[in-house]
Image 1 (tube, rainbow, N blue to C red):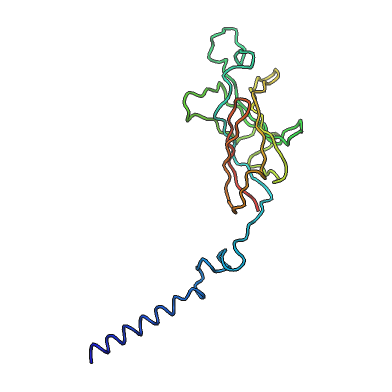
Image 2 (image 1 turned 180 degrees about the vertical axis):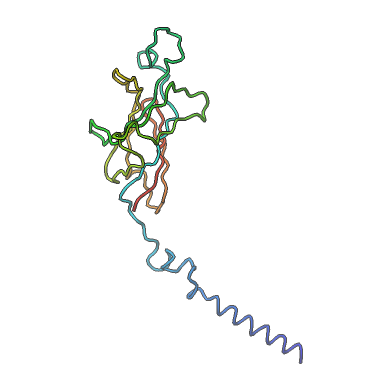
Length: 193
């Protein structure tokens, strides 16, 4: 009789336990519509902006297209003939920038892990990062050798196509490596919905 009572209580406990775990009432069930499942499936959001938080340069040409060093110096073998890097972010087709970075003097990339990260503006009227790029607008990042009082040397550019980077996955962050004209630029940011 004792064994029958123990078995009955164990069976009753198991029934209560299984009844309490019904998938219809479980709020974290994968088929729950409030959890992205169920009848409607997940809701895919469309971002309004790609907010760029940093621009990183990890490759640039060692010399100008004609073979000359980037900076002039009276002594031809001076190490200060390396480029002084800065980036400009602008709407494609526009001649004015929305962000111009500070300058990284005498830039050199010695290993594959070297890079220059730009987040600071050149001055208070040079725009700033983070910057919101509308999802349906194309932008350009120009890499320049800052020559101070003389004309800056253009080193190359990459195009930003924000809508082409979004994968309909409700992502929050974006990291994109762009390569063109002998330069490699990585952009980091967030999707704004």
